[in-house]
Length: 321
Ligand code: SAH
Ligand code: AVI
Image 1: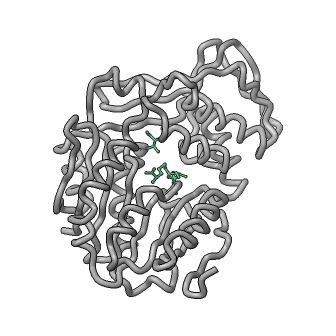
Image 2: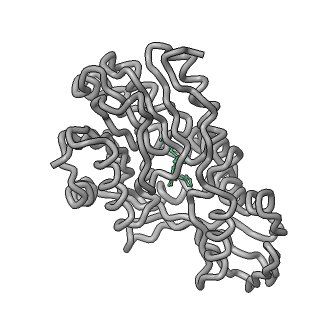
């Protein structure tokens, strides 16, 4: 382990109590819902990684292409001795492109709720890119958090790829961009990947892959509730549904009960009608205009925007207004 870096096992801040309370709230609500941040335990993060390699899941391919093509130009904007702070870092695959292109970046702060997965990826990064000090932060980035002491005072560049911003309601996305502004500091740049509105068949295929990995990812949420909260969800009695809601420009993801059934969890019983759904995720799609309006509304002004020839995905470079 490098002596410069503060690579310790990141500690999860999401307690079992919060998880249990959120699950009970969501299953009591009408219609039922579960928060998408709970997809990401170690198994869920691994399944998301598999999704990114699926032929139907274009966002990762498109964004990797854009970052690779424009890395020198993006890297030239980074201040000297800066820190790259990634919100929802997952495998950090996209950050690696920027870290390799930008000699001016000396520290990388991957922030993720999936603590165990984060620890593993941070250790690999430290080994692979020893020039950069790695300071993982395991937390829910929708709540205020402090950057590690070792990066405080460095100019920060925020990085929020993958269109994870699309998993938030517009008002939540605005709050998150405002919070990021506070965390990153007044002169920060922010690089955000945003998935674009496109042919609904392309969108449908991306969230209904032939190999069934997205279905597994969705069902893992119930498996996680069984594992961590002792519920008795029968995974075979629920199925994955994903459809594009054109009016709201979003993919909606559900788990639908295949039959009338009861599920027990922490001394409570939850009843399901045949066909009843649990809403597990939205994935908003943007136009260049709608994304720029969202960013501006949260205090971020566009510096540059990159899109691919198919107009599938956008990488937006922003600075505080
Ligand atoms: N940045 C990567 C991963 C995107 S997947 C990429 O572009 O491929 C979304 C990531 O955000 C997951 O790793 C998930 O664990 C993390 N995440 C989701 N909600 C979060 C939250 N509220 N706080 C912190 N991390 C979160
Ligand atoms: C992480 N996030 C941007 C993914 C998305 O496309 O909304 C999560 C995902 N859900 C199903 N497939 C991928």
